[in-house]
Image 1 (spheres, rainbow, N blue to C red):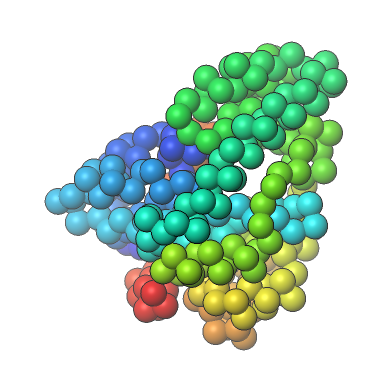
Image 2: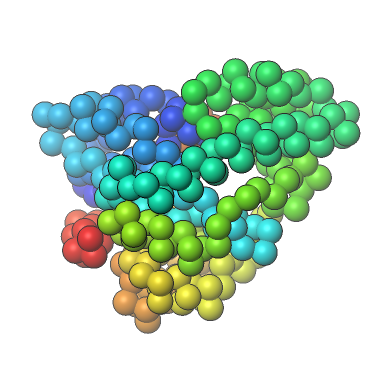
Length: 278
């Protein structure tokens, strides 16, 4: 399976698999490269390079950085960032601390909805990783209040859901500035899912993406497994108009989501074009 899966997660954030397991799977699949893009942390970088040593797999170190617009999450992938960059690490530290406070508030909302989820269990599931909504969703699933992880999100945790709590985050333009300031190439992740509780909603607006491009963004993740064909076509056209690189990634989270590593891949030409933006 040639190509570069530029969007994957591990147990360093809200994935369920180790970085070593992801690298092994990527090698088994015959991928050319793997984007290591955990939420708001660079902690898996060293282990990723060590696991891929001698395999021929290219590790593309990155993060999925959290930003916020109008109460909805806008995620920005930042590739080849300097993990020692002070301003970026300081902001990611604030985001990780915010996740703990937010998790406590979400659990309180679940208690108000008569769902007896435990914050201690959420922390246990997260381990050393920053707490994310998938950790909370797994804890809710264990209570028997829902049948599937997806039901937790659809019923409770989606943006504007009854257990949703807005989080502290910078705006998308500031996210671009922080990532490019750390030497990275910024790519807006799955813009078609912005604000969507279902796939019929319009996604991140062209005007916002244009402002992000003007701030130095290098690409659009147009090819995401949860994008509709209309999403993909629209964001490909917008990328062409704004001179941005079209990327693809599976958004793999292990068994936390029904997405498979290698499900969406960036071809060699697009990867080279993205790397040239460094």
